[in-house]
Image 1 (cartoon, rainbow, N blue to C red):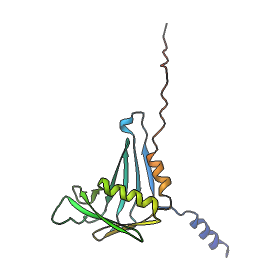
Image 2: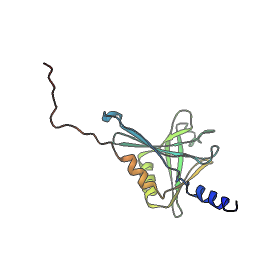
Image 3: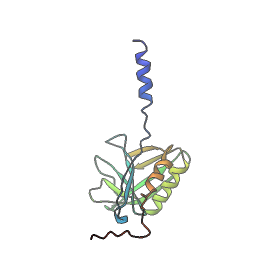
Image 4: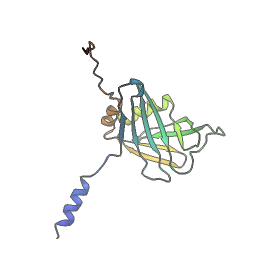
Length: 165
């Protein structure tokens, strides 16, 4: 009985997840080739969810909140700010706020900076208003490579024809 608790704790420690979730839709048609990499928020009330979507060869980034609304930027109801911080630097971007104000699309410069920071730093903090999320980047590169990977499409060199007699 006294060995049961340490064994149980050992089993639970082996179930650690890094927070990144990857899903993809594979289809024979290149127009419908999509994948999503997300880092869900830890807190449902004041956390930010990061979402990276690939449509064909294009990458789009979004931040989502699940309760309340993202703050507006200087009376512009279609914009908000996102601050990307590490232990040595901080950069603030104005990004497009989508209808409903719980989702915002990252600008191209913001997305490029975020991807570079996620690859180079050990942790990244995203902040928008009172919403904040700390991202562990230890396995980001592996998940991001999976996001970029397109499914193999075997295309025959010569079509095979069958004739019925």
